Length: 367
Image 1 (cartoon, rainbow, N blue to C red):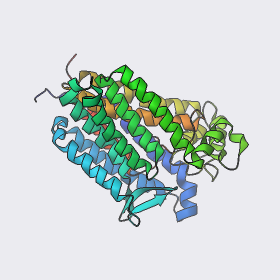
Image 2 (cartoon, rainbow, N blue to C red; image 1 turned 135 degrees about the vertical axis):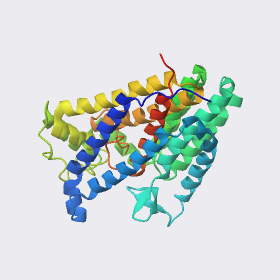
Image 3 (cartoon, rainbow, N blue to C red; image 1 turned 45 degrees about the horizontal axis):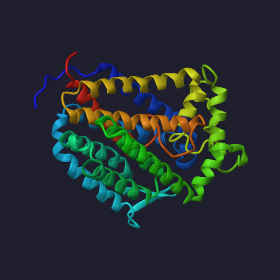
Image 4 (tube, one colour; image 1 turned 180 degrees about the horizontal axis):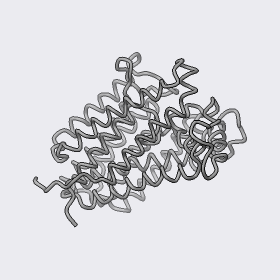
């Protein structure tokens, strides 16, 4: 396939770059006290975040210049590799346990999280399959069922770690792609009912998940236990006011917010930068949403459309869940904020995905 390549989408690239820079700066501010306390180095987390960002930017640049439709030959092998990694991470002695989940594989001084790779691999696989077999999607047995089986096998393997947050993002992103591709509403209605029952079952099967629900409904019922995180998050956001307390002046990052550089970094941003900083971050994510939807609508082929939809969907499901948790609208799930939270696999994989999105936008049809 040939298509005239356009200049890089400057607005999309600017929004990605601005969020990445804000992320490195805020990881330092949020983690300096933790780094000093745990590693005798206030720059411990920010140095690693800068390294992850550098690797991710290299991946972004490579994917910007690698014709995205050539990826089709690699998406199925990549999916099988990711399934292999999900099996490998469950092997005792290979998988590393952090925060109660066996979700990481150690590689030298660093570690990778296979479930993050699976999210992107699943998007690529669905985009490839749907672009070739979209006409089968109206049939539940021939079209939707094989895809759902693939999605939920991956979800089940992620839940063995267990990692409900990452699994939920993958499933939600997959459903967004299927909906855009034209899956029947009645099928989604049935799946929605089954999904609600399954979700309730997953919550009921683990006492700590029930505790998260009860603490979400009334965090003050256990302010030093299950309600601690959300209470401290709201204590950070409230004093921030309109303009914030100033860079580096957060109080909650001093051992009140657990791991403030990861899941609750938005609370530190709101505390130090106030409503203005929080609104600016949301605005930058909205720019990515706008330009990503534009890329999907103007993509020269259906593979590019579904790929762009999946990448944008993945990013904004994570943004909605993370910020919803931080401001008390959603129970605590352990989802990081894309481009801002500290993390190796999540940051580098998101930048690679956004490089693909920039590539698709560069091949967009002229309007």
